[in-house]
Amino acid sequence: MIYRTFGDDELRRLLDEEKNHPTDEARFVSLIQKSGGEDRDVALAYAEENKKLVQELFNNQKLTQKIYERAKAILDYFLTEEERVFPIPVRKIAEKLGFEVVERDFQNEDEFILSERQKELGKSAIARMQMREKMIGPNAGSIAGTIFVQKDLDETSKRFGIAHELGHFVLRTVNPIGLLYIEEACPGLYAFVKQREFLANEFAYALLLPYEMVCDEKIKYQSYSINLPIDYSNWIIHLRDLAQMPEYHVVLAYEKIKLLNMYYECENTESSK
Ligand SMILES: [Zn+2]
Image (cartoon, rainbow, N blue to C red; front, side, top):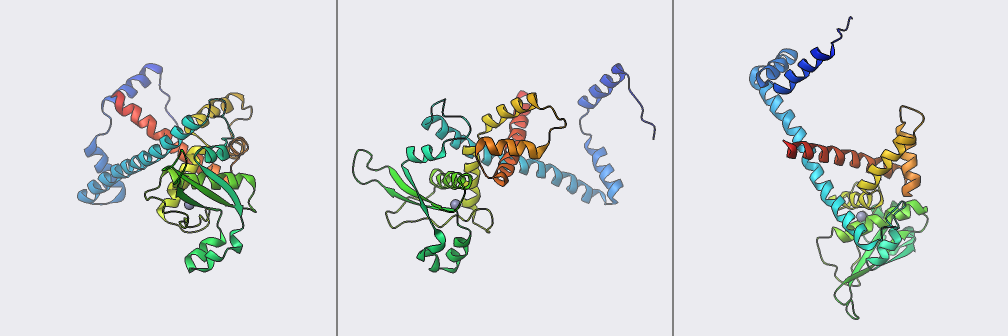
């Protein structure tokens, strides 16, 4: 195949032309019709549906943005500027929010025998928490609690477990009901779970790998990378060591940051129109 090369002027003219006539709807639909063999209505619906998909992806990031903002507010409020560096001192944040962290062995707990579901969750449990309202003292009325983490986990998983439980606390929708109230165990990534577990994980990502800090780190990392192209797994390992998080969580968290960055970029383009 012979590729045509364009002169600078010609290229600029073509780009201008494209900018001025971005998407010709009728032509777009007719191309879908021709390549898929559909009739016009099907092709039209197809084109409409594609636009909605883009919007759905975008809408999803609004939720992520809200959760990242909540985590950022906590980091800004409870940590000094010197403390807002990798690895985020998550045990300190827990303490400042009124939580004590206690290590337990969930495999040997009677509560898991109560229901089949608890038993199932207990097999992969990483953490759980108990919240209560302080009844006496200067902080009466505030919430305090205990975060239990599975004692056999390594420190990076414990850190993640603590951040995840703090997510439940920050994003809670019900009041704690006293000493006997204990949240269902959090089973890590293996089990099929309810929606609140996804939200708590998202919060943990936002707390341990804050958006701005990752963006700054990315710029630094690019500037001293000698081997190009930059390898994804090396970057993940770099972030893992910095953030002191399990590697698989870093992968998931970084993908969220990419989506969030896409969202912010789109928002900027929209608002500059
Ligand atoms: Zn959970």
